[in-house]
Amino acid sequence: MKEMFEELYKAVKKDRNNSEFSRKHTMKARLEEFQSEVNEIKKALENNDFENLKEELGDALWDLIFMIAIAEEQKIFTGKEVINNVIEKFKRRKPWIFNGEKLDVEEEVRRWDKTKEIEKENKVI
Image (tube, rainbow, N blue to C red; front, side, top):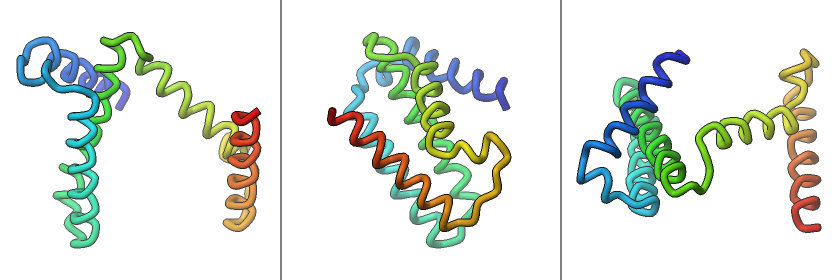
């Protein structure tokens, strides 16, 4: 999967570099595309249309990577930073999945909510 993800990332970068249409897309325009794909995902789920769901998830993934590529071009942040941030967030919020601790659903939700609350308090300070 790592190789496939890298190929997808390179394809998005090629699209940005080689397509005038794609180069004109802004982050905001791509967000609108992404929101449209999310609506398509919702419809596919409602209809139990898993073949279409697979396609729409791919389209949404393309749009997310596309927005990351724009952010990289504008020197806002890198894709590595996005990935690192989400990994670190889940290590903080769900440490039990990394240390093998077994929790019931209620305890997972309680710990998740508590960690989110602490993080929000720390951002305000």
